[in-house]
Amino acid sequence: MSKKLVAYFSASGVTAKAAKTLAEAAGADLFEIKPEVPYSKADLNWNDKTSRSSVEMNDRSSRPKLAAGDAKVADYDVIFLGFPIWWYVAPTIINTFLERYDFSGKTIILFATSGGSGFGKAVEGLKGSVSETAVIKEGKLLNGTPSVAELKNWVESF
Image (cartoon, rainbow, N blue to C red; front, side, top):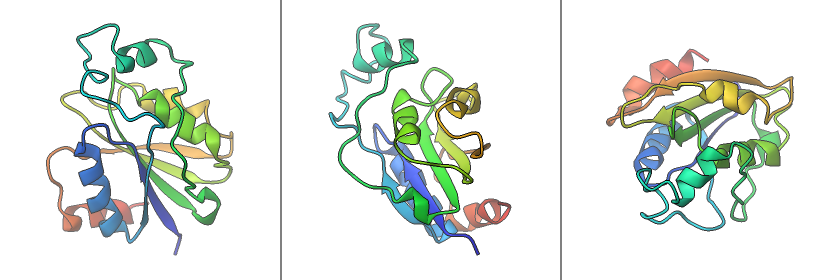
């Protein structure tokens, strides 16, 4: 049996809730990806073109700094990686996380939360941030409140 990690970034708490349920369903360890400077409500105002999130998402080379922490990625075979969908892709802090660790030979399964869009180009936008031997798979949108039982079947498919 492979060792699993659920790593996630949550700006407002929605993705955190989904990640905790997924970790329970998968029997996985949990790791929160935290920005060095937490996002404020004003930072997340996508209607403001000068908000922090808008500026970061308009510059795909943006790499927000991570808070201290060690995900110990080397200890895991499968990493479920979660985030809110921003502008049809993963927030650039996810690229920062992927570039911080060596994911060679790992399977990365994405999960996301979204107010209305699908994964868009999330997989494509993340592939350049990991080694060629890492496999990134589009997983599932975990909107609403999926139960542990519902997620167990999905997790077992990997």
